Length: 342
Image (cartoon, rainbow, N blue to C red; front, side, top):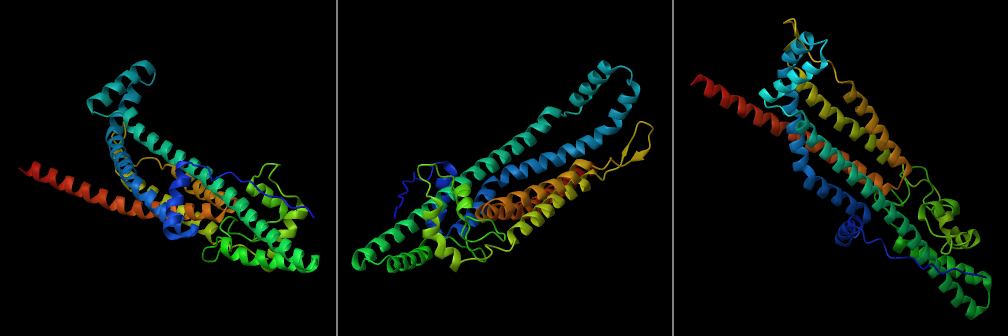
């Protein structure tokens, strides 16, 4: 009977891996650690998010204020694009409106969000791959040790296999990573089996060919776990939460923007009008929740947990930021009214 020893590399020493590792060392559970990590990260980034919301609101108000004059310029210089651009730039300069600067903050915030999301996704995927491979390595060692000892004593392969299986069951209780209803945080929160089959294990652990067990070796070690822990790993709760919370977060953000846009302006003919509805906002309300559902259903429950907490914190911060911005605007208007009355 042949057995394989896995010589796994240490967990990649990346920034996110180390940071998440500190939280794990502190609370002793990956699920809880990811929740605390997600909350802390969102709080640290909240000032940038707040500034972006305030800039977006100010820019929207300026655009509404400039719209009547821009309409007049477009009507007057409709046949002369060069002059129209020149007059438009002159108007922006006169009103102290920098169209490039107004977009810069948004681009920086978007780029930072994407970088964090992509690097975190990569980091947590690496952690998941390492944990699955390391978990199997420990179980395989427990099985081999118990088997060899029993076989050496009784020279009975059947009893040795039973002892090896008992050792695997005991060891699994030590190394498994569950959280609430999720039996294995390194598997999706779906009907996926708690213990992956051989093919899925190879896909999820990403072991190189030299470190891979054969299918026979894998099943010999993990077979007893597949029998004892067969069934769904989760119930799609994180997937539903990820889509729902992201949707409501986008709705709150878009609702605030629409409220800001509900300022009547005059067109070139002097008639009052409301700005055209922003279709891109409605599109994002559908696209982002759909993307979150795809990510959470395709990857580990650990990453899904991060997405849910991050989306929930975004929703909470959006509500708080909107209230703060409204109060600041109210104080500004009150101050302007007092100055005008004097």
